[in-house]
Image (spheres, rainbow, N blue to C red):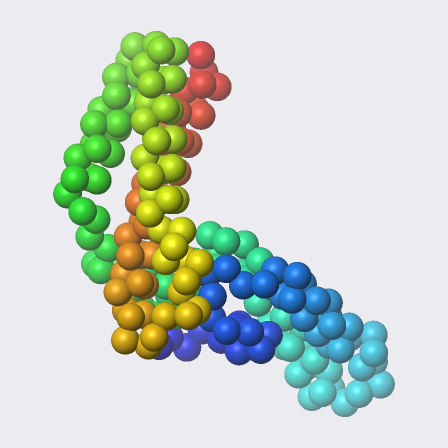
Length: 180
């Protein structure tokens, strides 16, 4: 495990890819009031520093846990699964992405809205397949027995990395669309 603060523990909720967002928000607001500097203006310098640290921890915890992609990266990072060199993707996916990237390069030289539309449709289809495949893992993560967690986290890492690849292709497509 990494030395990153455990935001789930800080909020008193189980580690989850699908946490109760209303509970997170409620906890964030409660702690925001508790650690608001104005309520501790007469406290010692040391206590004020501590309050500021807790307020910062609360802000960071909420920022990360309330955003699905950041939350996913955070969980994977805490389990040491986003370290460089541990990020091999399946060859079949890499081949699909390579073909999409080749089509994008052709678009650079020869803009063609029909090709761009086709690439976008392929990216959307890949993305939908990814989402459908990972949803049961994300939704059921909290209920998994401890010995099943490593396999689930590996699946989530693969999903996360694939999704980032697809995001880069979408960004390239958006640039193309902006130019044409």
